[in-house]
Length: 352
Image (cartoon, rainbow, N blue to C red; front, side, top):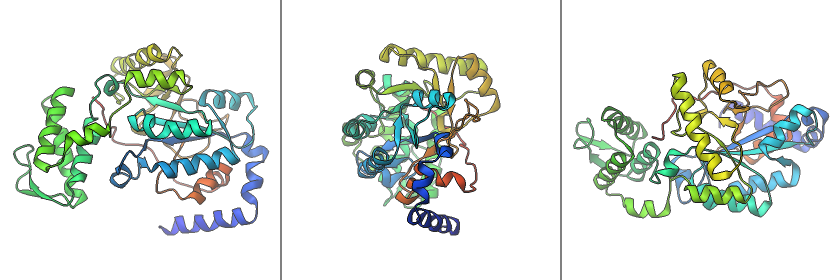
């Protein structure tokens, strides 16, 4: 834990003991703010060990949401944003959002939401929903991590000489970059990327068939999306191929392809957006307005107010590294009162 984190934890602990968190939670100041939470994945197996910044154990997710159900007013994103601008937010308002729409949402997150009767919005990318295979870039990283105890010569697959010591994160990262470069250089489609994953798994001696059977790092299928939409989950825009091109026509195509698929499956309007990987640029704002997008969320930490730009809304990304105390400080509003650095996403990953 850093010195800054230690100091903040001390402040949050004192705030809880002194009743300040409770006072802030019920204040008019907090009533003018909407906390938008962001989740990515709820582990089917060991994904939280591989990438704790993106994946959370189901028991931690349940504990977080149970705390919200006890102390906060959880609204749908659409209702929360409307009431924020109408000035009618209830005490301690929170909206829950989940990025990407992975199968683990269906298998692990939805049962918790249903159990606690909480609404949620899923920002659904759709390319790998239709092409239901492991998501190439993330699955390649996961395979390398699964072989982290090994030293393997991968020169038959990528342009790296000699045996690679996969116990080192920097080496795994270098192999991952080489795999991404290979896929881009050869313009591999989904089927050929899948074949590349099989070749990688063979070299690593990882049972890819067993992993596929669990549907780790797969997206929900169209049928699963339609099922959850019928059961109350709100599906919104996250681009078709999980990318934000720097060309206006290609950007518009990403939104159009994504929206057409979501609206066909859910029979509801899709006009809220989340920036893939949290990456945004000024030109995207104009293109989103042209696409009739009403709101867009970032991964910059903070609480939304009526003054927040509707296409640059802050969110709190909840992770395994966030303590229960810090989560409580955010849900009450106390954490918003402390200075912090703004975090912006960089290096967008691509799901196609």
